[in-house]
Picture 1 (cartoon, rainbow, N blue to C red):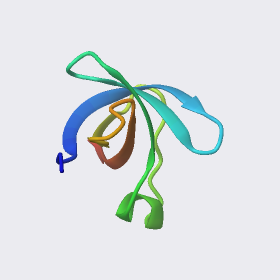
Picture 2 (spheres, rainbow, N blue to C red; picture 1 turned 90 degrees about the horizontal axis):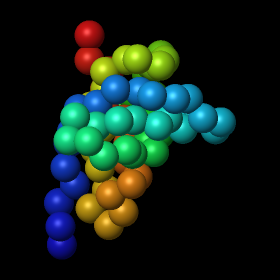
Picture 3 (cartoon, helix red, strand yellow; picture 1 turned 45 degrees about the vertical axis):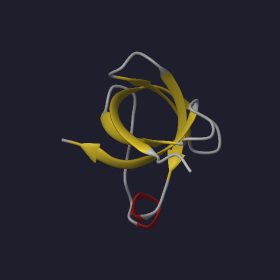
Picture 4 (cartoon, rainbow, N blue to C red; picture 1 turned 120 degrees about the horizontal axis):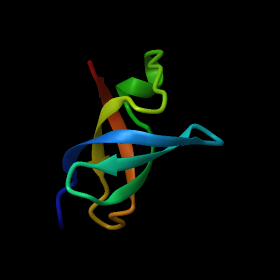
Length: 70
């Protein structure tokens, strides 16, 4: 089974239902939501923030925001 990949990117847009459009450093766009500890702890993410995204191996256009950088 393929493994999930962690990539860094920039939040481009906030969408309804706590979804975010993230432009990854490798050039692809991912629709991401909060996952794991980031959902339990109050993490504020706005447009222009750098984040670490865990990209799904089954659907490379979806992912989970693991943490905010800086």
